[in-house]
Length: 89
Image 1 (cartoon, one colour):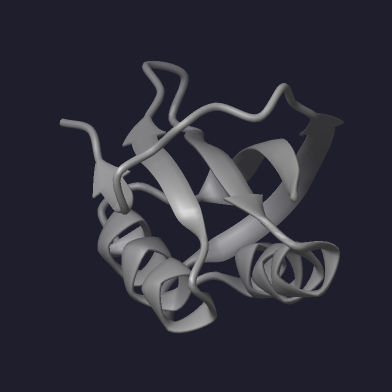
Image 2 (cartoon, rainbow, N blue to C red):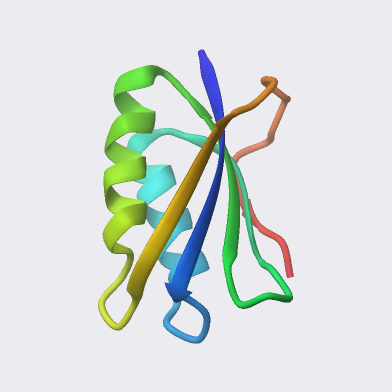
């Protein structure tokens, strides 16, 4: 298993990014969490195998319809235990 911190910049709030990321993560059987940052970005912690995470990161670079991703920052992360993939409000 691998874990990533993913920070997504651009028009990513108000476009159902978190809900869409949750749907995609569940589809790929990734666990973790997602929340909106005060600076307008979206922050994700994701745990899965490398293939799952690679596919998820590709999706994050596009996001849902209506999103306009301008930058994405990836950082390896210490694996934590998550119960599913949760939206933090």
